[in-house]
Amino acid sequence: MIARLGFDPPSREVSLTTAMRAAGVLERAWRVLHLPGEPPITPYGVGVLSSVQDVRARQDAARPGSAADLRRRGRGRLRGVAAGATVSRPLSAAAAGYLGLQGAKAVVTLRNAGRAPAATEPTDIARVVVVQPILSGDPGLEDALRDNLLSLDGARFCWLVDEDDAEAQHIVQRIGPVDRLEVRLCPPAPEGVNPKLASLQPALEDAGDDEVFLVLDDDTRLPRASLGALLGGLERATLATGLPAYLPGRDVWAQLVEQFVDNNAAMTYLTMAPVTINGMTWAMRVRDLRAIGGFTPLLRHLTDDLAVAGAVLGSGGTICQTASPQWLTTTVEGPGHYARLMHRWMLFANLLLRRQPMRTVAAISLLHGIHPNLLAVVLAGSVRERRLLPLVAVLGGRALLLRHLQRRIYGRPLHRPAVSLASGLVQPLHLGHGAVQRTIRWRTRTYRVRADDDFEAVR
Image (cartoon, rainbow, N blue to C red; front, side):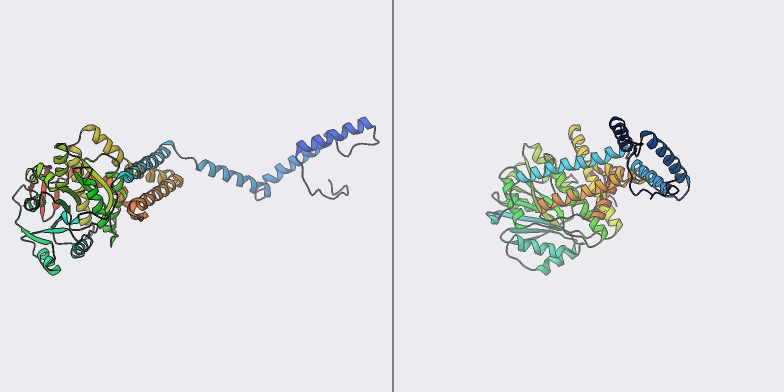
């Protein structure tokens, strides 16, 4: 129409409301000022033109592939995406619950770590006797033993080697005579007796009352400053225990074990008042250990760490959980070895829960049993609903939290994202396996376990 009238087509647009207001102002001006002719535009004309334009726009939009049709489809897609971003309430609750629970545990962990004894140069290290039950089988055994001799120079060492472990005896002989090192050969433990506790009792009998009895596993490296923290803990409590962390594993099975410990140890040991100890590293004054009867009353207990903790707490003693790491290396020879190791740890955890009052069981279950299940719920829900946002938020928040926590406590991040996720997801399976399967392989024997103080070797 505009072209037929000889006018140039419009190059700009205004809204209908603006056009109506402008037309109304012009019409009043023409009427009040008695201007000749008609105003350039009137409200009636705007209404007619807008109606014509609306009809043409509808016709244009109806044609597939037109600009209006493409704009309409784009708006539809945007509405679909916006609708797709909606996350179900259970999935949102699981994601928020996981991040909230782990965040709260991290805050408590760091607070308690700040209150723990400081890692310092140990004073009077000559009073410390480092007692290590030694069992062959791990390729890193000799390196770990040598590292501790260098790191804890000045302490007295007592290595306990089984009479029937020729390989361990050969390793000890290869290290050679060392000042302040005693090697003891231990006979096989009788039926129903914990072999580790049976070997520790003679070493305790030969220790002096003024010495500190430090039990250190043969795959554990104790930094000198961490020994200082343990000795500082004995100024506050009857027993001081260490915080385990793993050195990098060589293969995926060792890394799964590594991530299980590195992701959980600090937030397990430092969030509650101690109910057990880290059996890999702990220390007591000899006179205090003798005051509770030594190891003899505990020989029928399978879990030496739980038995020692129970004896200390039962006698009115206290436990100091330090926040200084001890570094472990464990060679894991394939999936079967990994499954057996995790099964033994989880069975021991079940034995621990059996001995606790219901209030403590509920607290442990809340703090340490729910988060891996929430992680599995978030992963499954995100896949089922095709919503990546909750999973990305949980995995990102989890990685940042663990790296920050590990850097603060261990001095460096130990987090491996993919292996860490896998380790967390299979944790409930290992716990269930430990609850139903009561036969374990430990040290050189296979045991059927009915209770902590009721077990028998399986021939």
